[in-house]
Length: 122
Image 1: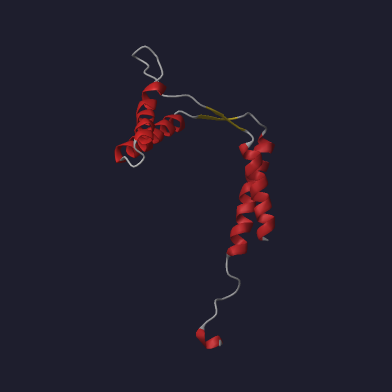
Image 2: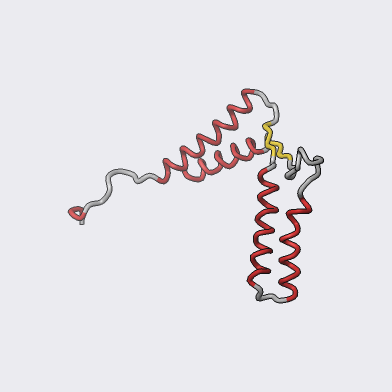
């Protein structure tokens, strides 16, 4: 039961995710010339890397490198655009039905069968 549910859920999820297009961008200063801020977010990262190459145990270097990486990834993730490609209603219902049916079978296989054992049964 579990393996059948897992197969259905994986197949439904795969088919559903194949219908999604993801586009990326980056932060922009719209009013101030329309330029991107990618270079500005690299400054703490590059400064931190430079400090770490000078002194590998520098707390400031590690903080700048970590903060720069977080800012960089946050900028990319915050500006992702996700679009569902046009598809037929039949295909959409099939994908979602397979996903939900698979999850239902997985949860059904994980529940206990019958009543739980009590100390009087031993």
